[in-house]
Length: 283
Ligand code: NAP
Image (tube, rainbow, N blue to C red; front, side, top):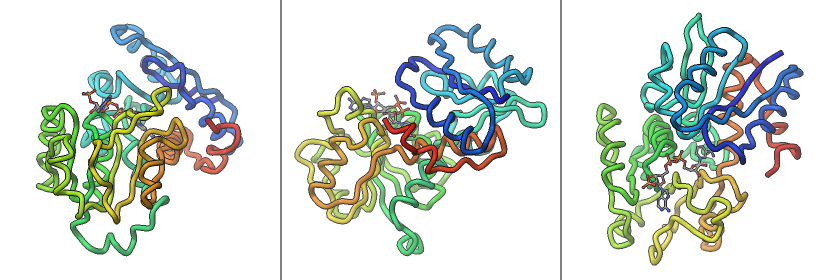
């Protein structure tokens, strides 16, 4: 019996149990995926869940807000990816050590290349991306895009948050820059942009009428757009981008991919992505 689960708060709207149930079924494994809501100040609750992973009672955990960074000090080791990003979304025992990994980054990059055919272009250097937001997922996206050799401009409503993110990656070369989150400042970048990534929650249910794209800023003519928000299936940002002819997707593919990568670490089984996407999981 495989015991999996998610720690964080709040967890009411999580679709991870459905996705992982589909993964268990696709691998023919018996198990369950439980939501463990832990209030932000409940350190004892967090420690107690982690001790159940150490003892083997729980096989593995996903981690979401607000614990992706703060849980690190309670683990024995991090994978190189989790260390580089500075955040953990997956916990498991490896060679007797409580280990933290971050599968958001590979989940994003794998789905980006699945959604858009970038093979020819990636032979060239110097493709330019703009990332909106500078929180946890922006870090994972930045790590992924750096690995994939993009130049990355970051913009967020708090420039100090972007500065902090850039400082975190300061040992990774000089392909990161910070731009003010204003149409006047961003407009100079527009003609050279090949990719836009939304890593803010703007447009997420229930606030579906909003877009993080600055008002009055034209979309680039030749860019792809990846919105990490997956709920609703088509955000206002994606609708607006498609309306002017840009290929644009929301983040359900990334959600499934990061889940499948975590599931493989826990069980050794490669779950069938289509079944994880399947009708049982649809939002
Ligand atoms: P986070 O750590 O809270 O960061 C959110 C970022 O967006 C911060 O820079 C935040 O700035 C900014 N922001 C929030 N509200 C904003 C607003 N109204 N206008 C402009 N900027 C705003 O959150 P996260 O973990 O990065 O998640 C961001 C989104 O990505 C969420 O919707 C999440 O569901 C989604 N996500 C999807 C996947 C997937 O697999 N598809 C994976 C991870 C995350 P402040 O700090 O100033 O608020």
